Amino acid sequence: MELTFIIIISFFISFTWIYYFKLIDLFEQERKYYILITFILGALTPYCIFLFDDYIIHPLGIRDSSNPLYSFLYFTFAVGLTEEIVKCLPLLALLFLFKMAINEPLDYVKYICISALGFAFGENILYGVMYGHYVLVGRSILTVPAHMFFSSLFIYGLVLYKYHNKPFSHIFKYIVVGVLAHGIYDFLLDFEIAVIGVILNILFFFLIVSAFSTILNNNINTSPFYTPKKVIDQEKVRKHLFAFYIPIIVILLIITTIHKDTETALSVYIPLILWKSTILFVLIVRLSRFTIVPGLRKKVRFEFPFYYKSSPDRNDFHLLFGLLTVRGESYNEAAIAVLYEEEIKVIPISSTKVYLSKSYAGIIEGKLLVNETPLYLLKLYLNETKTKFRHYIVKSKTSGVSHTEDDEPIVSLNSIDEKNNNKLFFQEWVILKKKK
Image 1 (tube, one colour):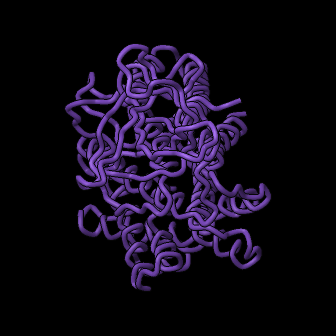
Image 2 (spheres, rainbow, N blue to C red):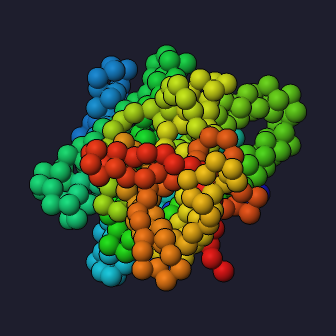
């Protein structure tokens, strides 16, 4: 009975992140049987590790050691390298069997992550059987996403080489980075001083969250199928991830109470959930916030997914009572995205002191990024025949009320001074409303 439960929970943990890729893969959805094949092959790959251990690792006398240096080398090469190699096998099989399945940068990362989720599914079953189902809480929040992070780093060099004319050496550079990240993560889990190891492990986990987010964002922005009418709905991503995770954690808590006792669940399990829920909150929020600008590709950095921000936006998410802000685009672009290349009404909010004397027709023609702030190019028609027009820059309102009751975005209307280095001058707040 417990084995069945472990299998079901392990599957839903992996399925949560497979569905996440469906939500963020904006421009070209993958065929379900490609995903299924990759996941099944990935679920079999943990058993390939046994072959590595029996025929390569153990015959060479490679073992974990009390010596920190030897231990680090063991976790990096005997564990990290072998696991990343086997997680790459389903991707190679897909490339060989279905060459048309992978036709944009995100596909490489997506499929190797699905393979990693299959690997994590198989691994979770093994760990659940060996140590009990309660280990699945920590593994669902940390280990399962971490497997995706390592694999995305492992393959990203190939994406840069294939799509961005980077030297062939980038393939090996990111392979090394992915393997090192995996080795460091596992080494810290096995750290001799447990409390310090746990803290360092979580801090390192946060660093690779940001790297993974940047890799995803870069690949989405460089898709050949880009269209401005599609953006990631942040709220939808967060809602679905929390909707999947919360029942999993609650069910695990209930089962622990049944199999153990209420005192064990309350004294051990609930504190574990509380601090790991904070990690989950940061993870979900950071991986829902993307800046979708065609061609924009940022440098992959290992940085914390939160920082101090002196003037937070209304749509920001905070930690430590507002002291820290989670990184990423704070404004949910979903409301503006549906207005791209559609005829809209530009309606001034103020009825007294206004720059526009009335409502005008217009159309959003483009998007640009200035100092990591998304701006939108608005073509405003000055007469009913649309023979006269003027361009403005509009910017999302991120403090106070940012939408109407009908979810119509409120934006700042800014004129462009071409004689003064294209400096922007704020004119007034307006509502963008789709014409019916």
